Length: 148
Ligand SMILES: [Zn+2]
Image (cartoon, rainbow, N blue to C red; front, side, top):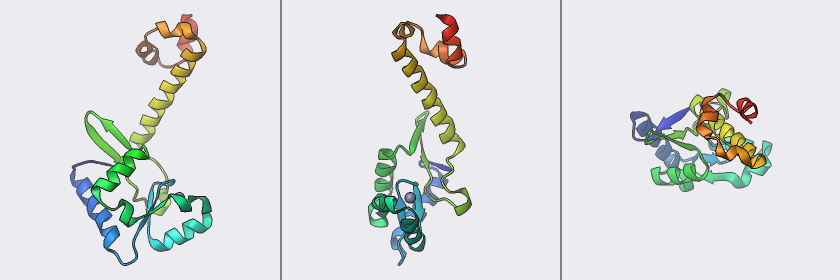
């Protein structure tokens, strides 16, 4: 699930976020899981994942628009598409825990392909003369080997 900045969805999301700070039992954000949890969930989470304890932020540290944006950028939870900022939503229901959005998956797949090509060029410097966009358009790495 992801939220695009400055949409109605975003406004609802911000209301949730600010509410996190006002509740008596404040919510926390686990950076490793990118998940906002209730206080009781957090206690359980620390028990199951003791190494996440240091990655848990209190609402004071994340529950404002500016703070959230800064953290999301630092954690690579933002994709920018045609000037639109799309954020991975840290509010996840239990049964969908940690499942990234399709958009995020596509983006990561794209990144993975790019890295693969870059690695290939490093190993075979002569490939650097080939237009990378053509390689991608040709559908991935296999074709390069045929080219050389
Ligand atoms: Zn965690």
